[in-house]
Length: 338
Ligand SMILES: Cc1ncc(COP(=O)(O)O)c(C=O)c1O
Image (cartoon, rainbow, N blue to C red; front, side):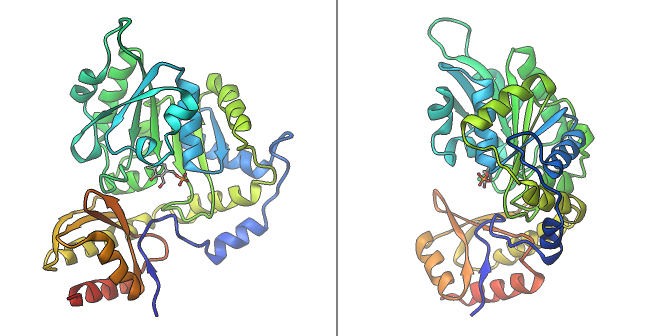
């Protein structure tokens, strides 16, 4: 039976080319001093997004949590969109790791505006938590892979800073956003105080995320990574996968986006699907009048895997190992469901 896995873009296996690049990596001990391939990846991504330094981390969650611990103190508050990964899927880390509270703000399509932010910043008095950080997410995962217009990011960043807030960007899928919108990385330069980028999602690497920061923040974030046990020694093997992905897996994200659109458009005339959110990138969210876990079970029996996202939503994500044929087979099977 086929195994077509749409649960996430994190399920990809490294390609042969990527494995070969990994085998040839020059490595060192990145905890004692330096692994040259890790440093190359850190420098390359930092430069690409206009930062001084990069910090290679085992996961996107760790990269985000290091940023939370760096920017926030006990009693501070971070403002984020209501569907943010840092709130839903990081094990309560903002409270547990940084001792901070979270202000959730509903934004259209998972994106905030200056007006939303304006209402969410606390007055400076003894009753309120200190509003210290704005945390954005691009693309917005739970919202369906949505992208911020660059003008909104510029306005949000300027307004947050004017009001004394630092800005973190959870850019787990930032490359998807760039490819889908046509924005350049250069347009994002200077907008964020920290930016996390995942290698193990659309870029197809087995492991790894980077936290990008400026020089003045580097020692602090590196110390926090060490404290969390996130220092990795011959991590150059993993970084080599990242370098390979930057060369070969960025432009191809457009294929994932096209396939997600093909899926979503195919859902429109499937009677048991009530609503589909047309994707901007590689994430399709849809709603059905059936029990979502039952839909997952029935499709799993036919070799198609997808994920429940709460509130009746189901998610399918296209990625490196989803082909046009997989999309057509899946649509066929879903159409035939009783
Ligand atoms: C938007 C976003 N941020 C962060 C993460 C965390 O990444 P990881 O699974 O590597 O911890 C994810 C994972 O899906 C994500 O979708």
